[in-house]
Image (cartoon, rainbow, N blue to C red; front, side, top):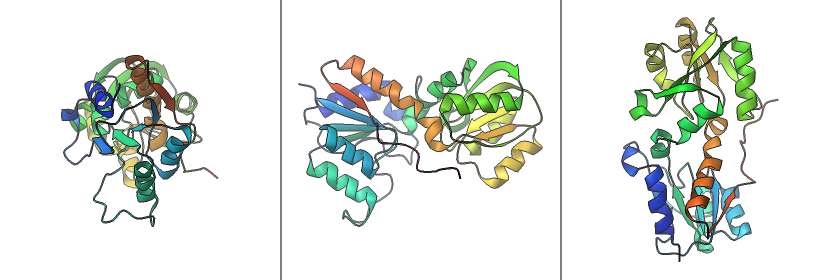
Length: 255
């Protein structure tokens, strides 16, 4: 019998717990370590609709990148989406595991997958955030050509960017909110930075330093790891059915 604890131990071989940031909440967020697992739902986020999807498909476990419980929750009621999701999981005996910043930093994790998805070569870890970001090379191309490449490979509906005024050759990627690492990108000699959740002033700072800064969206820069994670779990536990969420998508739209 495969249990939640078996799945948790395997995930922590892929994304060791010691790689997480001090403020993070990873591992088992909900449920029982001893509960049997025959079906797993994998998604980027454990939002209410994902929890309902787990119920609908008869999953025993939800595995996500983002935590189900991130900040202190003063009460668990049906007044908020996050706690309605928790209640739904508990009501149906479904457990939840997340690998968050530990998966961001891990070899083969969020940022290695992002670098691979964008076709970066000679990829190396960048020092910021405990080695979270990745730096690599692409064939020299115009900014416009690289923007089209990013949009296609990540299936983005749109991109926010500033043009650093140089061809794209050396690129840093940081899935999710990594724009605070801009100075590390500059010091590494990169001309382009792909990340998400970029603030207004950061675009100006990047342009002044000659760096093309691309905000491809939090969901789109991190979601590629989900299929990789699902495949790894399925390969390690062939007796367990592993399903990639079909309901989860970015809620932000472009008009």
